[in-house]
Structure formats: structure tokens, C-alpha cells
Image 1: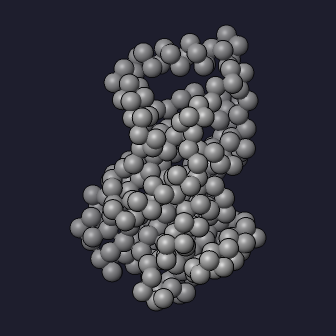
Image 2 (image 1 turned 90 degrees about the vertical axis):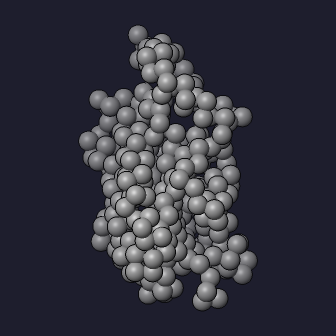
Length: 266
């Protein structure tokens, strides 16, 4: 059992993180479950262990550098290694910028979605560099390519994760460390319950394009097995990203006409 790889999953108490932890646990990985809701982590631990896997719940607040370091220290003390760090913890607030609370909606999003990713990565790097091995997998979003109204801060954090990941890849590749980013579109998780979105238009991700946490988890597993720089999913949305980045003026006009003006009542 000691030779089994170890994956550290942040945001493991629900959604993509929970599905990823469950999947990796079923595939022989030792899984570190990191999140704030310890009761959920312990329930997931029991489920993974009932299936013959190994899991370690660690109550963690990724907005705290000290909590992140404690998470890494406990993982190394228990398992002696970290093969994969899956930076998954995050949330969104989809409001007009002028309506956002400076702390709860703006500072917290940046702290969790971007700074937490950077701090967790920094905490595991000395170990990975010493071993000349490791894999950082970051949870991105298609908001890292196409920034839409009411996603100002969320998009800023995901653009940041994209830039951070690209630069990091070029820093740590010399040590044999891989860096991947998963860029999903809409996913059926608790994310929507926390955005506090109030849509007059009712615009949302079409059901045909909406992903399940399991689908994203499988993409993470595929990236772990065969490292890739980026995975945009579903693949068809590459067309929308290409259009938005190739024709920014038309994209601006369309979003203003069919979303911003109706939502603002103009």
C-alpha cells in the first residue's frame, strides 16, 4: 500500500472535488480530502475506505496560508509523499460589480480562487522539487477565456489561474513536475447555489452542454495518467471560445444586447 500514489484534493467536500476524490480512491490512489466541512470529509472517507481505498480528511481553509501549510504537513506526515495536487476549491459571486460586497464577494473570491491556488502550490513545491516529480492540476473555467457580465471577479481569478499555471509550467518543468489545467463550462454542482445570481433573462448553460462532476473528475484522472497542458470541456465549446477571442467586438455587442441591457432593464 505504501507505494500507492497520493493525490491531495482541495474543495473535496462537494461537487467536482468530491467526485474526483471518490474516483481516484477507487483507482488505488491514497486521497487527501481537504475542505472546511470536516463532517462531509469524514463521510467521504468512510465511503472510500468501504470500497477498499485510503483517505485522509484534513479540515482546511484555503484562504489561510497557515491552514494550507498545515494541510501539506499533515499529508507528508501521514503518507510521506504528494504525487498530485488538485487545486479545486473555489466559488463564484455573479453580481454586478457595484453590488458586490468588498470582502465577502470580492476579496474572498480572489483569496480562495486564486491566492489559495498559488499558496497551496507553493507549499507542495519544495517536496516535489526534492523528489524531481509531481503534478499540479488546477481547476480553471471557460471564464478564463471568455469573461461575461456579472463574472467580473470570478473571471479575473480564473484568468489569473490560467496565467499562473502557464508561468508555473515553465518554471518547474525542469524538475520533472507537470502542470495541467481543466477548463470546464457549466457544471451541475453547488456552485450555482452560491453565486447569488438573479437572472431576468433566464440565460444559463444549455442542458446539452452542462457537465456532471463525474465527467470533470474523469478528465482530471485522464490528465493525471497522461499529463496535458489544458483540457477544455466539452470540446465543442472551443468554437465559442475561438469566436469570442477572434471577434471581440461582435462578442461585446452580442453580450450587451442579449444579456446586459435586458438584465439591467435598459
